Image (cartoon, rainbow, N blue to C red):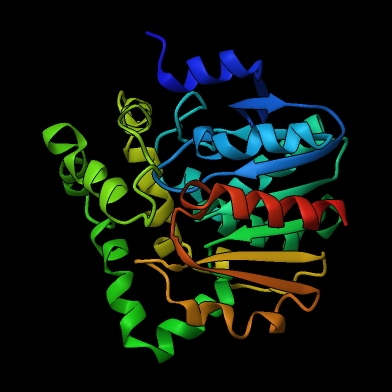
Length: 296
């Protein structure tokens, strides 16, 4: 069955491809030619999260590559929590950059994709030309904020719930992903952020064997193997742009205040009326700032 995501990519002339990376198959959508830009989505999304950015980047002479991360949609879904450790996720992207970008690219990440991007830029600075982060905490900043701010603990309580076996999967999947639909419909500030067809595409991507368990294993692996995220190096030397939707229900804006400690070559753009789903909620300002930074 052809989903809205495949219809959109076909209509736009974007190319669906597969690459063997780190022993698994990664599906990705590619648009344009020129300087490579790797777009890493978050939870619970897939490549379609970047539908507003692919065309904008391609139109300005960039080659945009948006993969389904390990465990998502059409990419491989290996069983077991250990297969979703942050080091493994980073190595997936390192090999994808090697195959699609001749070894070095601008990297853009949102949510979990942003966490992967932070670690990638710290661990493999030779692979990252420029770094763009959208509503994703730097690991060291997140650790500090949890120590200082009880409010962030409450915002992050769902991560503890996700540690339970089978119950999170059942809860999210119940009543045709009603919880997912409510999250996408109620939290963005723009009523047009997610259409019914968009939400149907996300539901479809999370259906099927391990379609939900694998994405949830990102959270389980983070708790079981915290040193993968928190060990040095933590400093990012690449030019870094952080785009932050200030009306984020999950992440406190305080997470952006001391980022220069770990990213000295830093620029922050705060969007006061955008939510956690910033690239969907405010695509035009995000694209403007993103392109300005990449073209500089």
